[in-house]
Image (cartoon, rainbow, N blue to C red):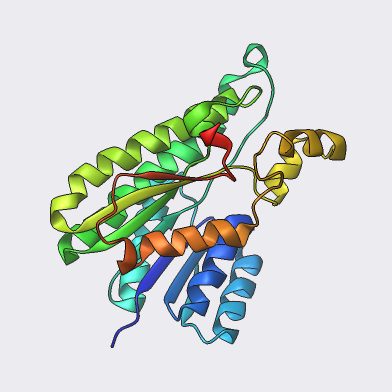
Length: 249
């Protein structure tokens, strides 16, 4: 029996790394991608130590040639692509709308939106030909409710939500599922950047969450593993808010 093949972009830290480890524990074959060779090779070695077949493939999702090559290398190495997790993203420079720059917009959208689009394009080409596959895009509750002081980031995640629904409609009849995960605050370096390293500000922010805490990266990863599994085979076009109840308020 051939074990499922998983590709994860932005896999070297935070949610991406936790997702790679979670899929490894499930026995999947894994391709992890990012822009830092040393960290990527170290992660691949860690996954192999867990008993998984794993490869690191360097790629920058902002450039179509690199994304195309990434997907082609995964198929060449493993023979197919069953699950893709489009996690690569950035929050850019935070601040009020009146202080936003075109450079910041370009930086955020080229990774979060163009990177997701290019990933979907080349992943779906493979999966449509296979007649099966599951794609999980990383959104955010900012893509559902908006976040003051993170307008461009929130706008980029709104775009990811739209891409997810559109791709799901295109892939459904062919057996290709496309969903998104929209985390609330997660205990990663990104959360620390969002609050400017201010512990009091972080505590105040987390106090607005019904769960009164941030999620762990592994809690988000477990949701992604579920969406990539046969347990979710009739679930497509959805964005699952994993947010400790924030969007239920």
